[in-house]
View 1 (cartoon, rainbow, N blue to C red):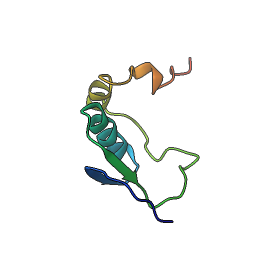
View 2 (view 1 turned 45 degrees about the vertical axis):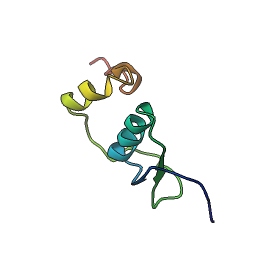
View 3 (view 1 turned 90 degrees about the horizontal axis):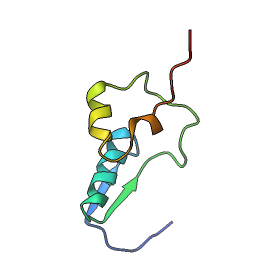
Length: 74
């Protein structure tokens, strides 16, 4: 598959870091393209948790409740 176009930044890897970088660049008005070696997203998460600092940084763009469901009651 061949695509043509103009981009300012190419991001390799659609994991948490690549997605965060792409989102932040777009907020700044930077044209970016995100590529990944996998043809589709995985049906499961590979992470086992989210660090508090990650939630703090991501809360600028997305409220933490939208990326983390409430914990089940014991």
